[in-house]
Length: 112
Image (cartoon, rainbow, N blue to C red):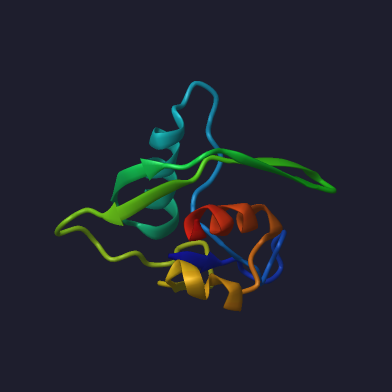
């Protein structure tokens, strides 16, 4: 699943994998669960942790720690609380979306 950043925000109109910042003292997996609950109102089960990757924007460096997940059985369907749209997309179809540059290496990992 990818989420479209709202217009008017940094990287507005670009698609990204949902998630967010890891708070000090927080484990990356715990941050993922917290952020998905806040941003999408859903709960997931982590299937696999992928290799971290970094991207330097002119305003700072993003370090992504990607996870492959699935929705928990009987859970709530994701709903965009902070994004303008959501899309369920197979990895081979991600090339048809304008992704945030930091997310591109994750697509390459998924396609391997």
